[in-house]
Each structure stands twice: as structure tokens, then as C-alpha cells.
Image (cartoon, rainbow, N blue to C red; front, top):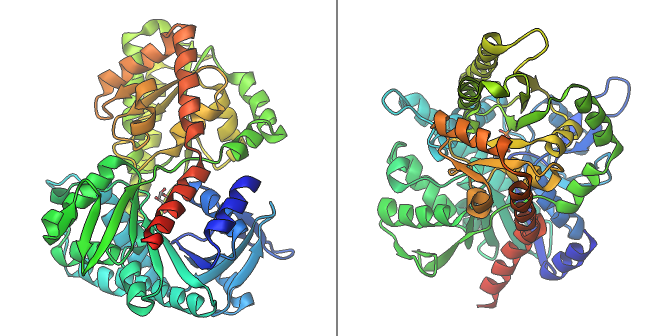
Length: 499
Ligand code: G6P
């Protein structure tokens, strides 16, 4: 991304960018016979922020999450910044935060993922859960607040080692308390937070106790700019400040008035790195996977690619497919539903149970319809970017049916890579629906009859309609590539500074 690099360099001159995120930008793979292998972490955030890292002297503050990370930290020295180059040549400066195991567990496995992730994706069955008690408060205090404090501390240390003014860019729901803590210590810093997940309504936030939800809001209001995925998230955020904290809000200017400051609240829909995706599409690794797919693929291929997360709605996807096979028997033997899944958060009971439910739902549908030479659902649980991209190239219908989702980059990756004018079947509750809804088949993710019908429409749509939708989807994603996501954020920060 040479063009963007010089632009970022210009925008950032005089600033010390500090990216603050739970996940480091690299994955460390220990190797018994030599030094550990270092690969670049997956996901849109790392892609976007590595452009920033390459263009500036930015430092990434992140959590050491296990023995491999800790070993790296031990080699470098706990209070030093690790300078690492991934095997693909990306250079990062990482300042690790090293909470003890218990604090990390309380922060990640008890508050961030089960509590905050669930509230932000409306995942609870409220008649039964959550049940909050003293243990929740302990996890909040000794886990979430404590690890956020350690992050803030590390940010302050990093800032102290540079003469440039700190520009602190905090990411996501793990670190809501960091901005206010940093502002208190570094009043000269500029702070921006991007929230990758949906922002629910003020009423739904009231599921969690007042002390916690007020702490989250006042933590976030330590920022100069709060960034969210969609305009609906922005409206919900403003309403939450107004309703739950009684703050003054300007809905038209999208500003919250807090402690004599104006906090800007803006939507920056995240996207993908188009040129990196195109390189992958043309790579030999993907071509090899395509040859393997060609050996088994049927006439019609429905695809989903997801982490095994409850929000992704994988089981209802299988129920919808079952309905499709019931109501359209002519499709049997001609179609396969390929679920290409990545294991996620298996330390949590709910996630382990969900993976079990996914596997058994697929097995049940297969038992019901399979024949000697046809397996209706192909379920694979594997991390393999080449295979995922080859799958994207090959689908006739891509099912993206999350219950709620911040953005959902699978929808964007899929439409950019696909080469069969495949049709996108998209949940109206995915953040990407704001951009892609007009040229996809919209579904209510809870309605399996409607999802089944949408899949049928997708598989039987005349070529010229499919082609025109696919073209418009590609254009839409290209128009808002990841470089725009990052440059829009920096532009707003610059405008703010100019005031
Ligand atoms: C979502 C979140 C990210 C998170 C990712 C993977 O996209 O917004 O913050 O990193 O899921 O989840 P994990 O818990 O494995 O980091």
C-alpha cells in the first residue's frame, strides 16, 4: 500500500501512534528445534493497523495471552518494546501487558466474552440468563478493571518514551476503561476508540449492573472520538449516553457533551484490504485448494465461513438448509452446503457446547438426506486462509446469517473473491447490511423458512441478475476499502485538532 503509507506518514507527523488491543498483531508459534516462528495475526484489525505500523513508528500495546507470548516477552524484557518481523515481512513494535493468569481469565473469559460480547450481540435468553452475583463483581474488579489498568499503565510508559504527542487508538470491548484512565495521566494525548461489535439499545445495556455499564460509558467518554461500525450503532450510542447517564447529546452533530468536552461519535464501517485479497486470489496456494474443491464440488455450492461463535447462527443455517431440501427435493444430490468453520473461544462452556450443537445439527441433516454418493453438508473445522479464499471463489450462494454482527467481513471478502457471480444471502442484522443489503437477498436470521427460500432464490436466479448484483457488491466493497477506514479516522482526528 505505498500510496496510503505516504498519506499516513503525513497525517501522523508529530504524533506517536499507540494502538491498544487485546490481541497482539502477531502469532508466536513455538518450535522445539529452533527459534519460534512469527506470523502476522489474522483479521481486519491487524490488516488495517499494520498499514499504520509500517507507515509510522507506532507501537502496539497488547496482551501476552499464553506461554508462547510470555516466552517472547521474557526474551525481550518485560518493560521493553519487542521489535518483531513476521515471516511475511511485516514489522511491528509490541509492548506487552502481562496480567497473571487469573486476572486474564476473569477479564477475558468472565467479563469480555461471556458478559460484554453477549450483551453487545443480544445473545442472552433473558428468561434464564445472565445470573449476576458477587462473582461477577469480583471478575469485574479483579479482572476487567485490573487488566484495563495494566493496559493504561503500559500506554503511559510507551508515551513517556517518545517525544511526540501520543495518539492513542484503543480497540474494542475488552478495553472500554482504558481511555479515561489514560486521559487522566496524559491530558495532552489524543484518544480515539474503535468498537468492532454492535452497540445495543440503552434498554438492553440495563441487563448489566449500573456500576459496570456507567463505568463502560465514562471510560469511553475519555476519548476524543468514539468510532462504531454503522450509523445505527452511532444512534444507539448517543441514546445510551442520554438515557443511561443523563448526558447532553447533539444527535445531528453526533456529539456527547461530557465534563466540558465534546466527544465525537462517528461511523467508520471497517473493510478489507482489497489488494492483499487479490494477491491471495491469484496465489498458487489458493489454486491448489481450488483443484481439490473441483474434485468434489457438486453443480451448486452453498458456502458459509465463520468462527464457531454463537452470534454467527450456524445451527439455524443448517435448519434452513434442511427446509430447503424438504421443500425443493429437486435440489437433492445437486447441492452441497459447505460450512468452513474456525474454532473459537473454546475455554468457554457456551462456545464448546455450541460447537457440539453445530456438529450434531449437521450430522442429523446428513443422516436424514444422505445417499450412497451424496453428503448434503460438508462440515470442516480448520484454519486455512488459502482454502477459505478458494471457497469464496467457488460458491454459488454465500450464507451470512448472523443473529447480530458488528460488520461481518466474510460478506465483504466473499463478494470480492467470488468468480461465479454467486449470490449473497445476508442477515439484516449484520453491520455490512448497511452497505451490501441493496444487492443481496435480505433475511431475518431467525426465520428459517425465509432463509430457505432465499437460498432457493439464490441458486435459481438467472445469470444476468446474479451478474449485475455481484458487480455492484464488488464495487461497493472496493469503494470503501480498509485504507479508507483508517484514513477517515485520521482525518476526523486532524479536523478535531484543527479546531
Ligand atoms: C471479533 C472481535 C475481535 C476479536 C475477534 C476474535 O471480531 O471484535 O476483537 O479479536 O472477534 O475473537 P478472539 O476472542 O479470538 O480474539
